[in-house]
Length: 369
Image (cartoon, rainbow, N blue to C red; front, side):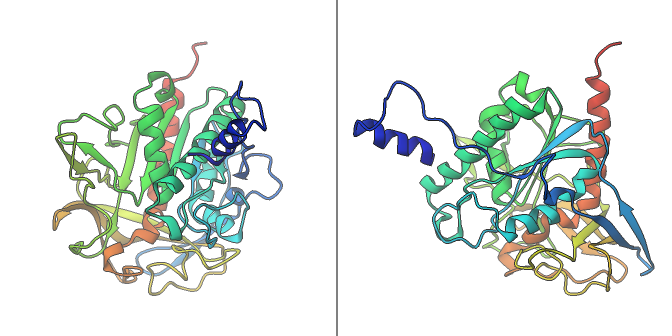
């Protein structure tokens, strides 16, 4: 139950307020939004690009001046707060993760990233805490639609807990609503156990996996591993395996080869952050080594390949080094696979994909002259 509703109910029952109207939702606190004085989603994109032979060049990617679409980003569990749900205070961890996972998409879209009362490590199994978290994401989404969207296409981007929140949002608010679904350019949901019914029914029955760069209204979802998932792997297997009598199957979309098969990843990591206490950064992630770089970003053009494979009962994105690509370590242990770096392993591919999808979406929805 959202905190604002719980407080209103107490006041109503005790006679301290009128029960004739619904409580006002708390104002959205924006981590990223056009016009903010200090917006981490518009941080520098200057990048040291490393190719397969080790040679380097510097590319200064720039945010789009007049992007045609928006991106709505929900960050993963990064807070160090210890209450069941976080406050809406912007801490260095949220700023860092927005730079790490969302800022590259500023090349394509306006980025909106709300603070939300995410579930902390102390309460990951609490349904009440999960309801509070989702309630604040839903309220922020409604605020965005009411005051900022103006009919623009939207890409939903989330990782881990953020992907879980967007999974719930899409299932409950978008997949079964054609008028809202029309605004969906695509969804990028990494590091979550996204499942569909084997018969094509249930959640995500309308929004299928992206199978080409020009397809819109679709989803990219995967869980990356560099070794076969162990029996206790946290990702890649449907949970529950059967829902309402229908077998569930894990979604795996290879961002480097949407139609299937093997593709080359374009990986990118932020090496300069306001705090390094963020899983997935170059110093806290899965890389055992990366070359020195004076720029905020380092990008590997062809050090890894990836393919969706079924292994040990899991459907995962298997990542394999090529050339002398750095060994990718499972962090914090093999059960997690490459989870902490899911977005960054294919960040270049994902940005290119959103660019292609944005062009396809705006072309299809262009008003007639």
